[in-house]
Image (cartoon, rainbow, N blue to C red):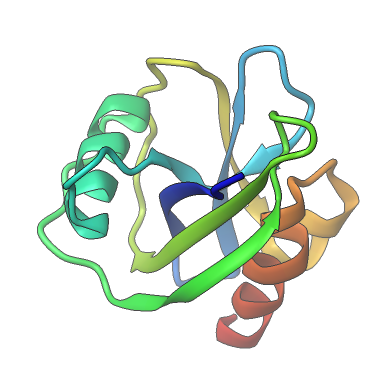
Length: 130
């Protein structure tokens, strides 16, 4: 089975906090972002998803890499993320399937129930950047 291809953003405020979101019906916190549509470039998918989910309009974002982990909300599936980085303060306007968006101290983020991608790949990167 093909991995679920997503574009996601590690968004930090430059002061030790990162933005995490939680989808409706899920306990796991993760980065804002979502599925890449067929024929869509990862950065274009990220722009669309950030606007849809948290009301954030971006022009560009540095690419951090491609990572794989078990999908948080689709048991038995693997998610493959094109991960980008943004440093900014944003007051999220939650919409679409997002139930909660919150700024958390990067050093304490591991205390939350995190999606495998966030726990295994994004948080270690965030800790290095902090």
